[in-house]
Image (cartoon, rainbow, N blue to C red; front, side, top):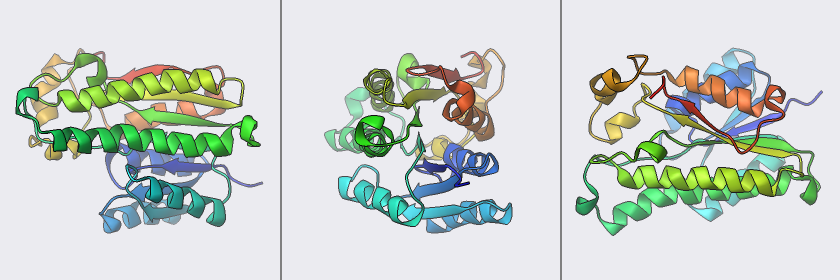
Length: 249
């Protein structure tokens, strides 16, 4: 029996790495993408292989169409047809108010978080959908609780980008609902990952966790569990759903 194929974009660290490792443990052949940190990506691949799984790392900037086309062609040729996509790659920039932000920053944030998710979803649907001769599949977009909180004084641009991901999740789920493809999103809250370093505040979770009803930050593994459930057959009647993993926040 051929093992199903899971693509995790941005799989070299944080939630992406946890999703890739858990996915391999659940029986997927795993492909991860990385932007620049080849060593981190290779560490994730090695971790999966050491546990008896199969994994492949591909360098790709998901915001660039040519990179995404090359990525999916590589999967087609080396492993076969993708059956699951975790649209995880994304980024945020330094905390600041909207009235301090540049157009260049907005373009970087929207390109990575929105265009990248759209491109990967498109290529996945072209392979999974029965309309295109596929055998079905599942997509989980990594959004953020920021999409409904708004992230004032920190990153309204990132929050808005994740709002776009939410809208795409709902719309695409309806488009492909009769074509064997389910589309959902996971919206993590305050999670212990190094994305907060990019924002200029490595200790952000510790500072803000008092505002979480459960009084703690979450782990990447806790988010990965939600992603893998939504990708699995156990979630066979779930589509167009935005699942908060936020400790009640």
